[in-house]
Length: 116
Image 1 (spheres, rainbow, N blue to C red):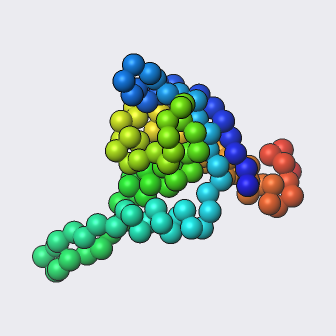
Image 2 (cartoon, one colour):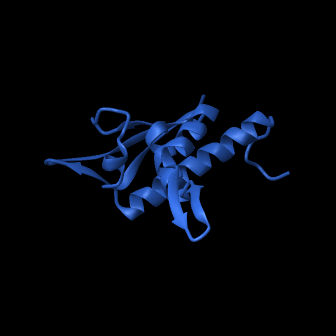
């Protein structure tokens, strides 16, 4: 399972400390399933209740599961803590996750990231 480390642009401020150093691990099928389960919401419509999984919550819940380090904070990161990150940090985390998945997919195919 691959891991990637990087520094967030803004970080998470808790007290007087700003936590910026991040480590992500690769996601598992269980992470995806649990993130979806935790993201489910019932919406009432004129036709009756509808069960939905808002994409933003699924992404947040998946990232909370795969962040193995954020400064010196205790993991796993809670959704409430994650929600305090800046939009720039959220975008940066999502981008790094996508890069990690693309590399993992290429490695699984036995290819590097060079063009054919």
